Amino acid sequence: MPRPTAILALENGVIVEGTAIGAIGAECTGELVFNTSMSGYQEILTDPSYKGQIVTFTYPHIGNYGVNPDDVESDRIQASGLVVHELSPVVSNYRATGSLQSYLESEGIAGIEGVDTRMIVRILRSEGAMRCVIAHGENLDGRELVERARNVPSMNGLDLTPLVTTKAPYLYEGSTAGEWDYRPEVRIDGERKHVVALDFGIKRNILRRLHHFGFNVTVVPATTSSEDILAMNPDGVFLSNGPGDPAAVTSAIHCVKGLLGRKPIFGICLGHQILSLAVGASTYKLKFGHRGANHPVKNLRTGAIEITSQNHGFAVDPATLPASAEMTHVNLNDDTCAGVALRDVPAFAVQYHPEASPGPHDSDYLFDQFLAMMR
Image 1: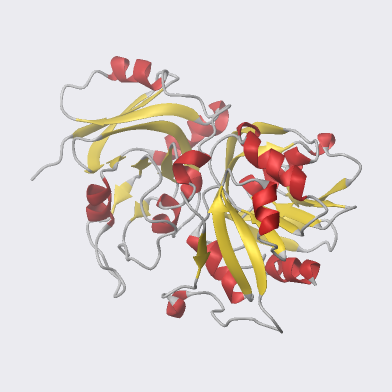
Image 2 (image 1 turned 120 degrees about the vertical axis):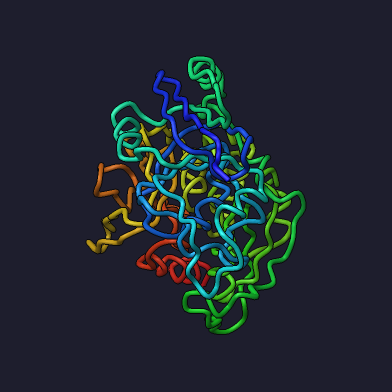
């Protein structure tokens, strides 16, 4: 049965026509971004950092190995919608339990295929990430959809952590998908350390990596106070990834200020930005963000180059870092700040995903660095 027409309408007035995929007849709105990963679409779509965003994949053929329950990074699809050149009608992998199309349908997520994703990415690179609408159906009014795209809330000033954080604290007890974990051995040297992870939209593979490095992990809501965290007497605190504008997550910034110098801190992505804001630095919105599994980063302390997995639309302004902080990593694509460390207290953070999933494992050493800081 033929699928209906779909329209992708951008706030700049561009209207792209294609074919409906996912939940036919559904509609989605959000900030249109692009990801350069060649695989890992299931992990990307279920990453809470994509809350409020519609993902365009630059790789032209998506969905060929299907989906399965082990590769999700949260309990649902978090991205608002999907844009692909071609959605594979065939699933070819023995691990697959379903197709990407059926997964999108079951989650109520709309998408569009049969479009020139190269053209879309060129628009986003030249004009920046922008608000959009994807709608399905015949006789759609493209101009009306453009106006609706212009009314989608801007990502600037938006705190999305309440939509993705845990509602109550819980103890992470390990993964049941150990066969597919990277370096699944539990790396315990002595007594296990206790880490409290502030959940701004934490990915499951982050919890797996922390657990495998010998940490007992208590995950707490994004609004947890420093007093409540200190009452748990952890050996260290982890600041997770998450969506939205970091400057809007004011409760977390205040919390981190109360933890500095009292517990070792390790942050990634949104956690990196919140740590930087807590010491007086500022953040700004990138033109089109960094999203993919192939971003080169230089460690300024060692000179080593890491290929990293990234997903963020904001960055720390290194010129605003106080004297008590140093930039430790730089993104070699655009010289943006990719890591900071504090000189006077045990705290560091990076603007990428050391747990990857999807992506390379060059940055796995950061978990060892966190453990060494606790000791």
